[in-house]
Image (cartoon, rainbow over all chains, first blue to last red; front, side, top):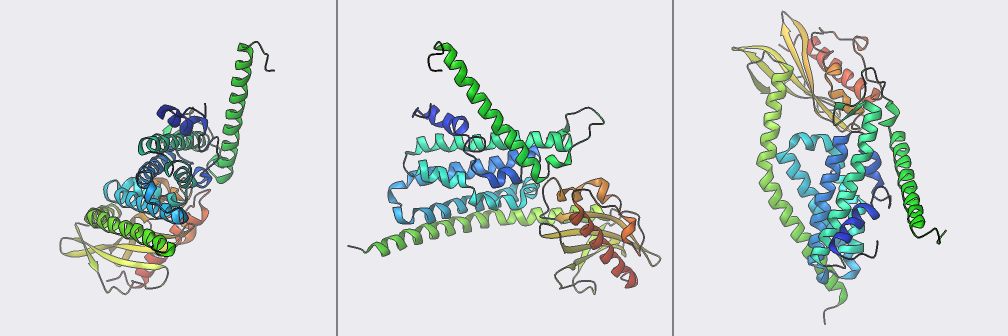
Length: 213
Length: 185
């Protein structure tokens, strides 16, 4: 699967096979910090997706002109520029959402998924391939954050996107929206992903007669 | 042959210049919108904390205004007709995550200062926890309380003790100071 170099294969690798949140465990700072409500998770994922796609395409476009020795400072300057642009745009056109995100928008600069995908992929591949990779990783990150945030909001506040999801009288577990809840939920999610992988592998074995057992 | 140092420096200089240039452009384009958003937000906030005020004027040299780390930042007089009927006070304080700004509405009538409402303008409190200082059950408890205010008149929020006690303290201090200054008249 990881050897599939088609555009779709590249996209799926970022989104699922190497999901930044659930498989690679990259970008843990925003993952753990902002995922206590579904809206926060979704908007944070969206802003990261924007920055990742723009920076990856720009750097892929100019990859031949970037001297190897100063590539990291150049990547950081490019990423920081897009983050600041996103920050201004949010403040100008959707001030309500900008207010919700607050300090976490500037922190996208140090999200290691962005620098990671640029260093590992965009600086070595063409623009279209880089776009597929950035979209895959960005959407994978958004998806991971959204799942984590929905579970935490549901158990910690009894709501998802502000809508009640449990019976009346449900007593929310405050710990789920506090920092320990982030670690607990992430641990169970990763455990589930590993269990799913092993089960898939076993099924594949039954299909081939269990010879690989 | 240009030396490597010059090449690397040139590459960085060019990238930073382009970055600065594009940021300056985005800043210039978005600034009017951001300013307008802030002005409108202030107007709506003034109306929200002091609903009976028909128009508001900033009082630049009001004695309540503090230059300390925490305290009253701006005083807006709220008019009914031509008479000052109350104030909207912009108060700054340090919460759990950083600086918080509140707008506190106060009605002044017969020498008595009564809180009419509060609004959180800016905060850096933890999303989902300290952020709950924004919720109505908490903000609503201030309206109708008459100066002098005391801490035990107000509830704080579980999971947001520092943020919510700070809001209570900021409201109490600003309103009580206004009260001891003779209603600010």
